[in-house]
Length: 196
Image (tube, rainbow, N blue to C red; front, side, top):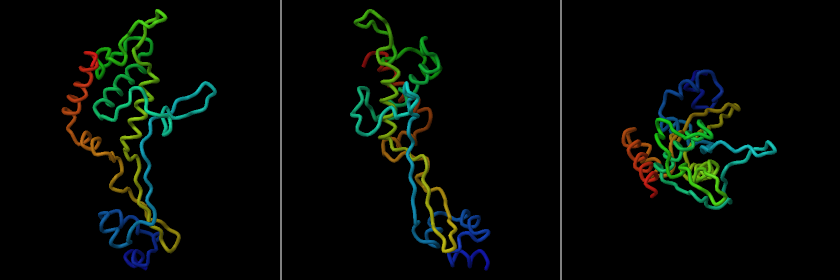
């Protein structure tokens, strides 16, 4: 049986079948094999927090309610990411990096009721808000299309949604050139520094 005959007979474990199908566009594979038997979609998630007992849990999950700093605006989330990275990189110091050139409205020091001075918003509050935004962005981390063969073999390939945001505003932001993205994030950072 040659490779084309194996594809027609749906012998997907046959030598050379996957290599040949990989050269085709998805629409051609669908024409040959039909709709996928399985589709796997995995969404990007923020790293979890480690609790005092060593267990891991997400900073935010469905059912936790809306965080104080909740946002789903891509530019705001990117600015938040810059603040988080700077604070993780320089704990206990002024969080200054190239992407976060000065203290912002999230990390600027304020005097608290107990007399201590510290960031307006805690790092944990930022991480919770970021996890919330990541969930609602719906960025597809992995999209797999799987066809089952009659011989127990499978043909698996990445689907078109692999690595793409599923929400329109996030897809539009991702489609902007890097200069425009930096400009929009800069507007958010400037507004934060001005207390807006």
